[in-house]
Amino acid sequence: MTAQTRLPAAFMRGGTSNALVFHARDLPGDRAEWPALFCAAMGSPDPNGRQLDGMGGGISSLSKVCVIGPPTRPDADIDYTFFQIAVDRAEADISGNCGNMSSAMGPFAVDEGLVAAADGEAVVRIHNTNTARMIHARFPVENGRAAVNGDFSLPGVAGTGAPVRLDFLEPGGASTGSLLPTGRPVDRLDIPGAGALDVSIVDAANLCCFVRAADIGLAGVETPAMLEGDAGALAVLDAVRRAAGEAAGLDPVPGSIPKVGMVAPPTAFETLSGERLGPADMDFSARMISVGRPHRAVPLTAALCLGVAARMEGTLVREASGASGAGDDGADAAIRDVRRVPRGVRIGHPSGIALVAAEVSGGERPHAERAVVYRTARRMMDGFVYAPAR
Image (cartoon, rainbow, N blue to C red; front, top):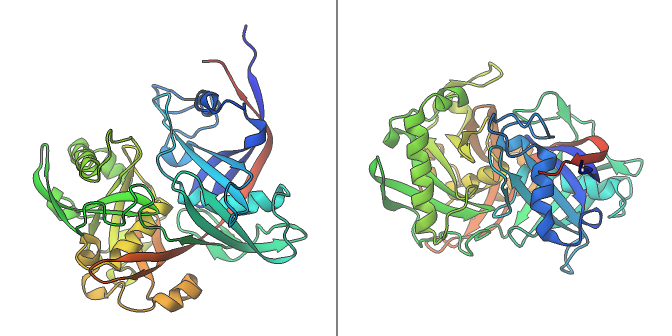
């Protein structure tokens, strides 16, 4: 019988995601071995879709791996590489970053002694190797460790925690090298099974594509369960994703990008926790699909991309924000503290409202200077994870 591989690891929540977190020094020197190890540790592939024989939770937001190592650029404190582990396939995708898990990387680095931090506010400069972009994480430190307790509430996560501010610097072109990969805020694409549809393809923090919910016969405030039960709509959205990926120059189009979502004007809906939200609570509504499954919140990189797109003339996201005026004011104040600025870009999603501050300049030739969000993070376990031979 082949022995299992025993690896030191931490299990952390970052935002609305969970992941195994490894030091690069604890992994095999041959990186070609990593994907198989990660899939085995997470319990993939699982044709039952549950990952019961691993650490994964059966959905994309709970099937992730992060690797932390020494910085490879002078303006960074750590390198961070993200792996999206497919549930039903032996696939470890590194084509994009996970913004939610980015919020756990600074606290991990301080708690592991990779970055020295005195009590007060720590700043950790994170180099995300997936996108070759910098992220600055700011969070409180108490007794030499990242604070956990606080009064910040994140929709989709029970309770409150210490806020982690994430500044995504120069987020444009993270996947393709261009904020607008086609050079246009809207493209008319021929979608198999749906005909010609308007699509906004925007690459900020992660490559995303957005369609009007109404154009595919939906309201844009459907619950994840409703979308799960609508095979036709999911098929159209995946066809949009693939067509947008080809239009953006991806060949082949990977499974995790572009992320696809539908947007709609502010519309009343009930969140997954039962809270009733009205049009005045949001600038627009969005529903995102992650690796073929409806997301219960909004992936952080998708929220950043939506926030940037809402500040760009001509995009379908800007159109959906309509009279709310998202992107017209409040940018500087929002960058200072997004939590206290009601005129930040407010995105209605199944779990509540995501608030994003985005700073975009350039008019017809837009340039994304930065995007800012707040999250919470927590270490839940550390020790050893076992990866069986597959």
